[in-house]
Image 1 (cartoon, rainbow, N blue to C red):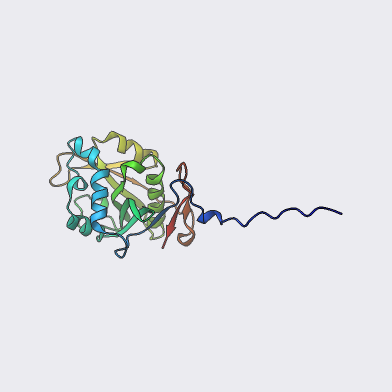
Image 2 (cartoon, rainbow, N blue to C red):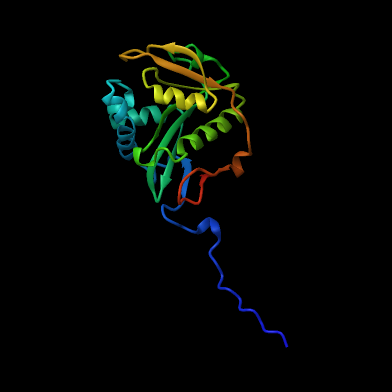
Length: 212
């Protein structure tokens, strides 16, 4: 007579397991649970290094009203961990009023206020934001996805180039003490928006997933 094998206890589905830092979710900014004050504070932290370099980026010291105005100029997304905003970007389909000629093109989408909290940098979150931005732009029929970053911030220019962006222009925006590198690339659709999921190099997180 064979022995019956013990049946292991039911395990929690992998998507719900929290290990270490738990799950990190990319979703739209939600005024019912997110605040522009929180977003502004995170932006200040993320841009502090550029401020110390003497670069007067808007995000270095902008107030909450400016954060709100810039976020509402397009579609604002946040990266959240346990309800806390640790990253953000705003996507704009077209900017007819921009001082940058490339941004005024009808088929160019732009990324604004892209930032990741310093304590969460170098974990792949920035790459995930860019990957989603590409999908967002491509599904709207845009031929190019563009952004700007201070030209003197070589580490940022190098990062974006490694993500496939190319330098298309150099612009001195009004009020700035530095030139901005305008970087652009052709967006690629890798998967449908509804099913968009992108794993990132977080040591303990399960994944970054998009939530509608």
